[in-house]
Amino acid sequence: MKHIFAVQEETELLAYQSFLAAHKGRLEQYLDFLREEYAVTELPRAVVWTNAEAATRLLGDIPIPAYTNEFRTVFCPALETWKTIYLRQLDHIRSDEARNYYETRLSENHVLQILGHEFVHHSALFLDEFDAGYENGIWFEEGMCEYISRKYFLTDAEFDEEARINERLVELLRKQYGNHSLENFGAATYQGDYASIFFEYWRSFLAVQNIVKQFAGDIQAVFREYHLWGRSNSGKSLSVWFSQEK
Image 1 (tube, helix red, strand yellow):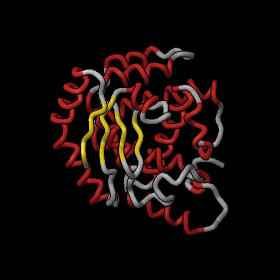
Image 2 (spheres, helix red, strand yellow):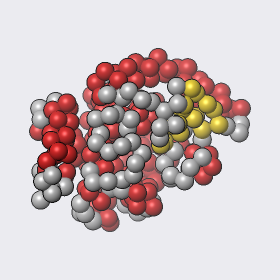
Image 3 (cartoon, helix red, strand yellow):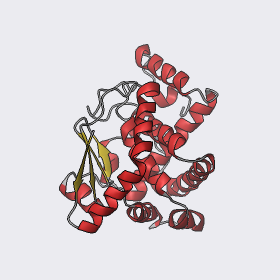
Image 4 (cartoon, helix red, strand yellow):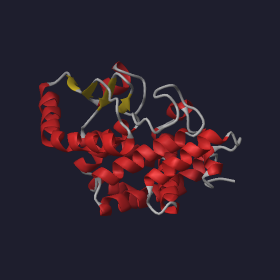
């Protein structure tokens, strides 16, 4: 992959180049891991390193500055940007635990995990054609991308702490957004505010984490079951198939 820097300020260019230089080896090892374990055979042609404004207003209209397709991955590697975005979840709810977590506990491991999430989307193990749109079971893909990238880039302690914060936020945000089906995850998700967007991501991650536990930690077995659902023509939604919903 090529690395392209879309910046307006020299300070941004130097910061993004420094981030890439510090983590390039680790990212390359991660991509090898995805190729070997998760059939990531075709990656985007380039990563576009840019700031949040350019990512969400100039290069695309997705409100999260991390997204991918077959041509390029657009990503903002600024830790402070992600702290600000995550804290916006708390605009209408109060959680001192979550606020302290996002203000003090995030590290470059978490930034790498966000980028790592985007690369998992390129796995041939997912049933839908990549970038073909949001179909039944997109929550599984988003949750699995989150799970795999977290397991790789976060320490065990970081993984557990992030999951605990996600559980707390889902509990609080459910009062505002309701206990609708996981299958509601789709294109309309990105028309909401940050809290409603991440509510769907965290629910999807927690559902996948629960499924992986049911399969004794065997992610490949989870994918085999997912493919069995895809071939079954049962009429069941994926969330019902995996017993995440009635």
